[in-house]
Image 1 (cartoon, helix red, strand yellow):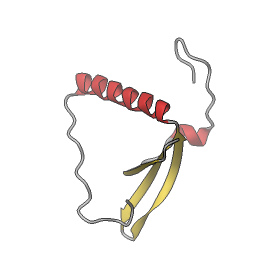
Image 2 (spheres, helix red, strand yellow):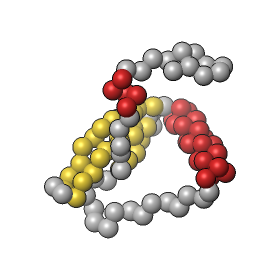
Image 3 (spheres, one colour):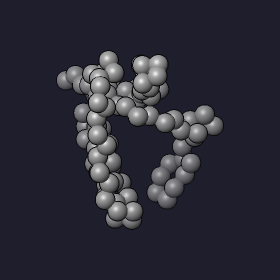
Length: 94
């Protein structure tokens, strides 16, 4: 995939399909942030980690800024988005 002012990036077909995730856990150390993206299910109860991303605090700051920018663009186009509510019952992940 290539866009204006970027380097070409390759992604295989499985990556390009994307994965649906409905839960994210973020943890950190003094050196890095870990983001786990999961699919949680109530029946049977439990979840599966679909991806883990590990990045530096400096890059995490840039990720947050990029997400905030994209949410603003989305809301400017499609209207305000309300935050999803937390699950009523804990599913064993913190």
